[in-house]
Length: 259
Image 1 (cartoon, one colour):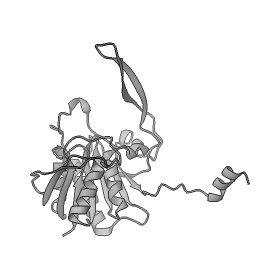
Image 2 (image 1 turned 120 degrees about the vertical axis):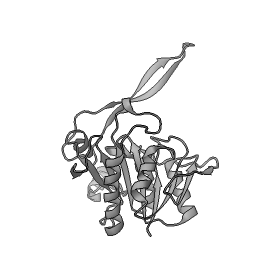
Image 3 (image 1 turned 135 degrees about the vertical axis):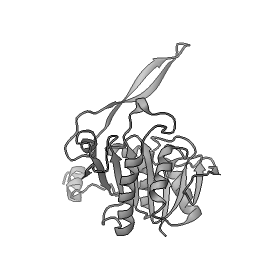
Image 4 (image 1 turned 60 degrees about the vertical axis):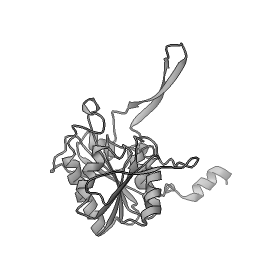
């Protein structure tokens, strides 16, 4: 049977990762290695200056499950070192969408990117949620449609592989999606948030700062954000981890040397 690595950045106790196990368990052996705690926005950070701890966790449907006191990238590295090569890596189902070039900040997407650097095809999948109605580990969220799309996409990737030049897929499912919701093939939007720093004052009169993001509300057609937020479609973006610009190197040389 195919060997599938499942991870996330919401933590091993998230209902999203349990929903993903149900979606994947009939497709292959599911190995779960995920952070013990919430590690959103950790990007591809690695834990290099202290040891990491691993804890066996009971996750129904998984062949084995470990919680790691590190980042999503740590989880992928740990899993490969301990269990060897996998046929596919899935990261999610994440609570909240991961859109635009800011997926490099996302622990969810970065886990799939890390797996791709090891030659393992990956899927990062996120579910749009209403944060006003979301509690704890995703209590009350209906993952049924997201698991349906995850199973469809994962089964296709296991059967056919990813096309040449595609290392992973970044998938975003609308909160109101149904099994009939169309899939849109998209490119990454330029930006989803415009971050800034908000200054506040503590009870002792000392200033402190929060990084906050103002959401972009206008999106270019053809992008993941437009498909999800405007068209209400499932966005699937093929990602290549080689970020080398597709430009004539001679043009760059002209800029640098003037000749």
